[in-house]
Image (tube, rainbow, N blue to C red):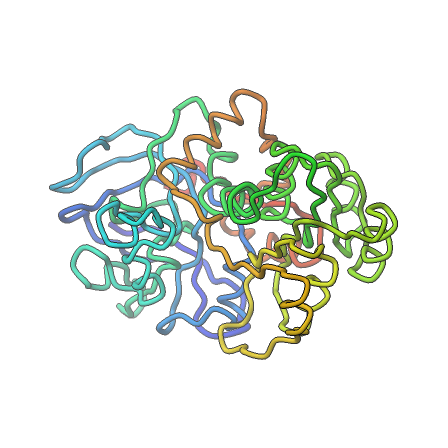
Length: 377
């Protein structure tokens, strides 16, 4: 079928709304009418080249929610009319990684940036104007009113959940929350630093809060975001790591934070040592933020890493199981234990995508959401 989507054709170019053609679902695939898509910083990394795809053009978007309209052969547990969230990492449940309990590291993830479908290794999306194959972000492409995707990326949800908040758990909230409660293993009484208060950082903040953290120190250069962090439950907020270092030292009597979670929009290697310095001896520093994939230089005092027995922990998707975590987090939202409504700062039409990303880069959003309507069909 023909529809539209937000494409980029080269680095550092604006998103372009163009007509695309998507294939019909084949074995193990599902067609979805998209209702909402979060505007995550990772899609901006496509624009800058920090996350290199296999080529251009690229259809953006990896944080979405919608309604199943058609299922292909071999799809069980999903049917037309189901409300679903898209998991930005597929989770098949049967590969060695999934069987080992690492469902966020499913072996199908090796294909995420290649652009060909899991089901048959073909290009399923094409630009109508010249027939060029289009590469969808993480095999999804939620910046389009319709998609066809492998069943391993589709998670059925409670139909009473509003789409504009449901989409957030497809990436940002699940990644942040899991970074706190699973990767950092925040425990009652822990002092926690969260650097970067966007969609992922706010998820981490709420995870730390629900896990019983004593002090939550939020770091963000944007004053409005610091104010939002305090409203969401942070106990202290700082504009930069230097001022946070002094504040955390004073409040903890020099012990520093037992857990540090890095959720900045872009991570630089020279920043790692500062984040470890604000982390207590025997503490854990979790790296959730994305760096340029070509970057390999890190500033780190190796002696202090050893002598103070600190842990530097990478994580993706919060270290969890998307098919379990996504419904569970939404059940917490429904029970009033997770604030997703206030994370949605603004809603946009697809045609406003460049405006939405300007708002993100200029610090005006916790999360901007593209909301599709009948006018998009």
